Amino acid sequence: MSIFIFATMVISIISLIVLGSWYSIAGPFLSHVVILVGVVITIFTAALFFIIQPLITRSNLAKKTDFTQKLSWLREASNALSSPAVLLDGLIVKFVNTPFLQTLGLVGLEDQIKGMPFSNIIHPADHHIFAELNAEAATGKTKNVATKIRLISLDGSAIPSSVSLTK
Image (tube, rainbow, N blue to C red; front, side):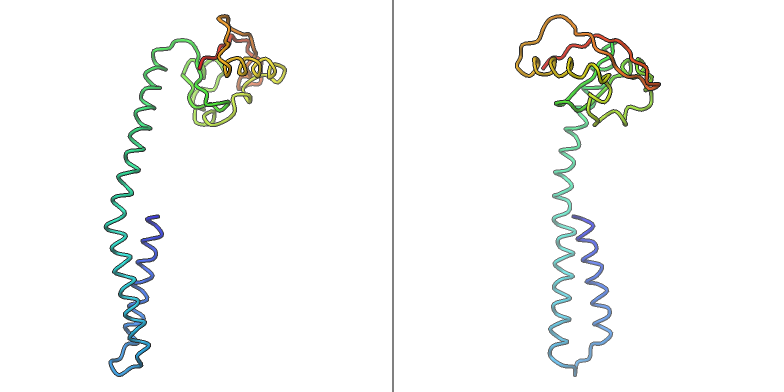
């Protein structure tokens, strides 16, 4: 939004400069109207830029603070866990801790894993096991025992692991 307002203000100022160079007091009435409209647009755009933009920025700052608090909580929880852990939103990976990355040989690739489906990390032969586990977690009927599935590491090898889902 701010780029649009800034661009409109710049175009308005350029138009005023061009039209101002054509201006003559003895000119036709239409040129006076065009210049007046250009001045009004410039003032309106400047008002949007300087009055409304700080209001929009404050709301974005509140959202950013909320996200930062969630991220700090995830980091604290991650540092407290010594076993590999993944935080999922549906089937999408939202957060992985360092032991998980080390297990799969993906240290330094955390940004590439975030946002991708967790099924991309699971061995294709074990997709149905994870789907059953996910369905159980969705209904709230989780087992107290961990399920064995294979995860795919960076080099393509299958790593057997114990998986449990909680909501």
